[in-house]
Amino acid sequence: MSSETPVVTPEKPKGILGFIERVGNKVPDITILFISAFVIVCLISAALAQMTFSYINPVTEKPIQIINMLQPQQLVTLMTKMVTNYSGFPPLGMVIVATLGIAIADGAGYINAGLKKLLSFTPKAALTPIIILAGMLSHIGPDTGYVIIIPIAAYMFYASGKHPLAGIAASFAGIAGAFAANYTPSAIDPVIQGFTQSAAQIIDPSYMVNVLCNYFYMLAATFVVIPTCWYITERIVEPWLWKMYPIDLSSDMAEDSHKPLTAKENRAFYIASAVLILMLVGLFVSVASPDSAWRSPDGEIASFKAPIMQSLVALIFVIAGGTGLVYGILAGTFKSPKDFTQSMETMTHTLVQLIVFYFFAAQFLYAFNASQIGILIAVSGADFLRSLALPPQLTIGGIIIFVGLLNLIITSASAKWAILAPIFVPMLMGVGIAPELTQMAFRVSDSAVNVVTPMFAFYPLIITYCQKYVKEAGIGTLSSMMLPYTIGLLLALTATLYVFWYMDLPLGLQSSYLYPRQ
Image 1 (spheres, rainbow, N blue to C red):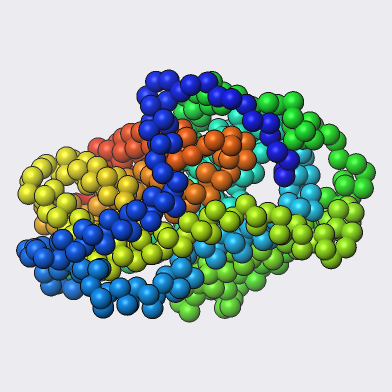
Image 2: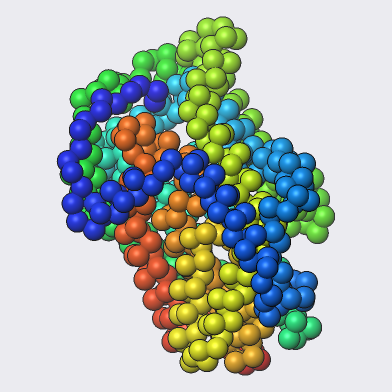
């Protein structure tokens, strides 16, 4: 998977997607973008700090006061927190640790062998929905799909004669864009539910929100999301990518994908796969026990407090690395300890750009949150929406639009909902809309817009995946090829929500559309 693909000069982009790409690719490097954003936030905070606002912070219940980030005391605080802002930036450690484990399996050749096996019996016509489905199933873990599924999807598309960037687009849509659709509960469910319940209890102290209050909708949405993303990939995105970025399928990488495994490699693959299965079964048996150390103190598995959820990245490192090590030794690709360590070193070279970017992204997010500008934007926007006094159906539509726009600058679901839940949930309860419906409207919009905003934490990583096949790929390339998914998912998920509402189908366990519950 480490071979280089010959660069082909693309056709000059045309149409709406081409326009977005041209404009987007003129945007400065994403690291420079965040450096500029940091400076702008500091300057804006200095100006807004001179003003008085009547908006109330729903968390502190005090008037919002913008903090001047250029004050000497704030600059000193920034300097003291600069290192911890960076080291504590959530995606940083996760991406590096997970990549190290995957690098062992990749450098040993196990991933390549597995993909050849998978491609040998997967019909080309079914590849796209399988990739989308794999992305959706990755929701059970905290962002691990970005470092596992997306690069594998690109390679599988490439090896099967499809455009690799279309594989990236389809898997990215399944992981981030379809976050409001899933077959299983995910780790984010209890986090979102906690904010919703606390907000509802501002109005009704006895109100309880079930952690699976949106599960029936999310399960049904999978049957809408997969065909929507499948159609967009095959009919819109991939034809456009072949036109703009033709890929040479006669390269060494493509030829290698069609070479059969040797008898030695086959034996190594089956033994390593058996080791992988044994590790997974052992983990499953351990977690299944009611008194398992992997569970949270209250016995939950899908909770951020559960050690299993906190250890998923470490488990990826151990399981992927262990499987790769067994394969590498048996197949002869790891002839010495140096080969083992070099497999990790080779892949981590691709993370240099990301490591640099995360430093400045962490400082920007600190300044944005510490200045209170994010809270001011959220509260003032919600206040405007409330002043419109729309009918319930239009109000929910307004919530979806507002959250989508806000998601362009605040991409963390938990961060946004921590701010918005105390505003939206009590406000809509006052007009007879249940917290469960408000929460679902938020999740619909939050997921669909993820894939089109450069502020999304994993954008630089995904651009790096794109550049493996198209050297000149940039922000505009990724945004333009993901825009059809945002539009399609927003329409599909919103329509599904309104169908549920019209037919009075339960959104999930102990859910309701009306408050008080009827």
